[in-house]
Length: 219
Length: 239
Length: 53
Image (cartoon, rainbow over all chains, first blue to last red; front, side):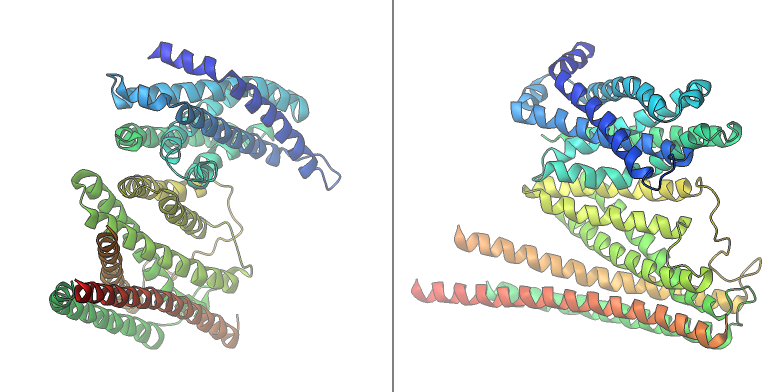
């Protein structure tokens, strides 16, 4: 299955490049959007902004990866494999996770450059923790929903519509946590609380996705 | 075919009678709720004052909305396990009503918020959670509309109903993570517990709204069954 | 808040709930009416085909 992951990565290298480009462009747009008042974007906004960018970037990546498979008819070949359905889920989720992580490794330095160099470096471990926890949730939920959305008509529209409301709690926890870090608010308990929340969120949706994936991927 | 239609409507008559009875009981309880709430219960001591009376309609509706979603959740689980299309119909009807009740929560909540806080909207945990619920369950219908294959549609709808229901409490807890709002006044009767008259009104309201939900559910399911029966009929005529 | 104003808000809340609920009933009623019309037309079609057979 790991080899299959790597194969998935290879085939969609264009997607990674495109996602990274999107993320950087989005940050530029946000900069202009939030400094329209003439002042720099406050730290409160930049934390949330980072996550908005990640979420929409993830959406693009998810949509593309499944569209690619469906169009190429890879999916039928995959289902013929004597492989457990949930293993398919794990491999897909891992692939999405790796993509997202890759984008973020490249994007966070850019973000730091644009918005808050000092703080990022100072709080890097905490930030990495938040990002990692958020990524797991986004990937688990996203993989499940993308599998469902793949079978629908306007699939590029359906995926965001079903994904975004469900990801709101994750967004709240991750964005407020990140904003807190960047604005220098005391880390400690509130950060821990948010990390714990993200952990619970991840756990719940991982179990849900894992448990229902064979139904989602269909016969 | 006409004989079958007549036969089914003969079977439907006791079902209709039950529905009417349920709705009548609902009306009675709701009337009691309003009467006790306005006539017997004392005016609230907090800054809410008379506006607290909105509670007697707002809170039962909120509870019933959540009940509807829970019913949809269970129906979805049962559908995935038993593959019986009746559970899909139940889920669809429950979500539709849940959405209706959620909209009612928002409508009454926004007006109450304006009265209590002076602003039309506040990102307050309960209102926000119901907003997300509205968006989630509106998405349920969008999803259903976008799947052409019928068996897949029901399956995906069930999956979504399950995920959405799990998300509602999670969303509620998430909103409490947000920085403390400017709206400390909790919507509800003041004091450590409800005065017993408030409680009576609230319980009547809950019973009434729940019965209303059950009655409407029966009607909705009947409509869905009729629609599906007609579609089968039309297909058979053409085929 | 003065009582008169509070009463207006309370009335507005209850009224709005009622209005939305009635709107739902109207929509549901129309759905039902449409289905019944369809039922009648299908019954007519069946009768017509029986006559022709």
